[in-house]
Image (cartoon, rainbow over all chains, first blue to last red; front, side, top):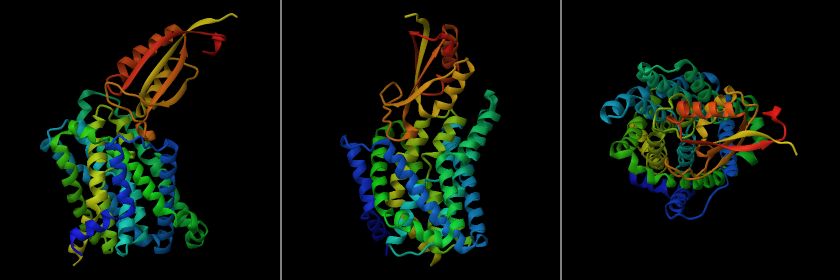
Amino acid sequence: MDIFDAIRANLLSPAVLFFVLGVIAAVSRSDLKFPEPLYAGLTIYLLVAIGFKGGVAVAEAGIGRVLVPAVTAMALGALIPLWTYPVLRFGGRLSAVDSAAIAAHYGSVSAVTFIAATNYLKSVDQPFESYATAFLAVMESPAILVGVVLGKLATRAAGDDSGASLRTAVHEAVFGRSIFLLVGSLIVGALCGEPGMKKVEPFFVTPFQGVLALFLLEMGIVAGRRLGELRKVGPFLLAFGIVVPVLNGALGVELGKLAGLSLGGATLLGVLSASASYIAAPAAIRMSLPDANPTLSLTASLAVTFPFNITVGIPLCLAIARRVYS
Amino acid sequence: MNTHPMKLVTVVCEAHAKEAVLRTIREVGAHGYTLFPVEGDGSQGLRTADIPEFTNLQIEVILKPEAAALLLERLGQEHFPRYAMVAFESDVRVLRPGKF
């Protein structure tokens, strides 16, 4: 299967088509709107479902097999802001605090992108390690903390209360509701194991595809509404939002191979590296680096990188992995 | 009915400013507040309020006039430069002045 077939297979999945439908709804100013509690409910469902499933897989595989790739994933998350920061600062001529904020968003991860990737791998019959959800859980926070520290170091001369705001960032990065739900469900799943899975399977596994399609419809609307902001971010960030995920994706695939993952697992680590956070990172950064311009980081991650990954980035990571493993 | 003059301070801000604003409200001596999600448009762009993280909040707090003045001054100095926010005060009359 060449890269174009891979992309076409992804584009014609219900989840991606509904995402496109959402973007069209937003751009055409349709009055379609999800009630906010529905969005919150769908998020909780998706995070609990993948957390639980991942936890069961961790219990099956044994913590020993998960450890090395999980530590690799964590290190990767911390590393990405360190190389993207100078690119933004000196290549993009952005302010230090904006560079740190954007670097944190790109080092952190998007759970929905990850879920869409597992969905895609299933649809093309590419096996992967189900415990990869653990990588998602450990990759969310390190980049946010590194980004905040970078921002603080850069603005220290301005003299502000770095201790207090670093604490709020740590709290947000570790106890924010998405990471809390995900890690919590992973632990619950690991404790229940396969017998527990049998009990909740009809609720958490069978309807999953439909819920994901519905959620991506909403995400299409949310991302589509922000397309107008693209004018404000400039050509550098547009290019950054597409080129950097591809580079990070290749880096993730390579490190996944080194850490002993299968082709499917390395693809997922690639997708995680390629993805950018638009929920956890904005919340933590807004509280700890309030001088950063949120329009820049949020528009790049939500209106550029997220749609790119959902449509092209995910099959591209699989194509890179197939090349690396052949 | 015997009512007493107080100030109602209304703050409309981005959701991410919530903790910072509530801290300041406590620090100027308010005994409580009311908060609700809202949507609207302004100088910093449309707040579609489509997902909780991007919503706008309206926070209302009733204070003694001195505390209200202090709150507005601190909001202006500490939060206006950083967050998307407006704040204003209005005159209200309450039944139980000791409550505020």
